[in-house]
Image 1 (cartoon, helix red, strand yellow):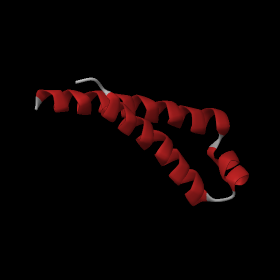
Image 2 (cartoon, helix red, strand yellow):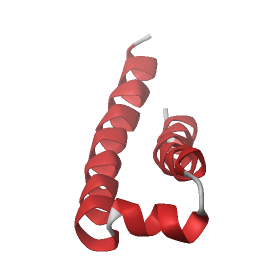
Image 3 (tube, one colour):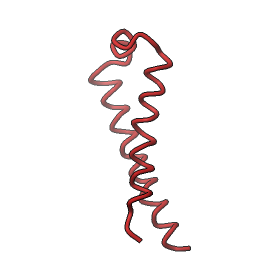
Image 4 (cartoon, one colour):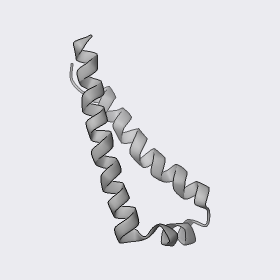
Length: 66
């Protein structure tokens, strides 16, 4: 059971760090409104950003060595 908690801890730390990096990138560098103008849909931008955060965190959870 401890190993599973360790995997969750590592993936949660990765999730938080990756989320902060994407927030800084999107809000500071790329400007959120520019992404909406480029992709044409607010919903599409939100879903893309959520997947960019959730999928790598799930990958870290899955491939963390026991």
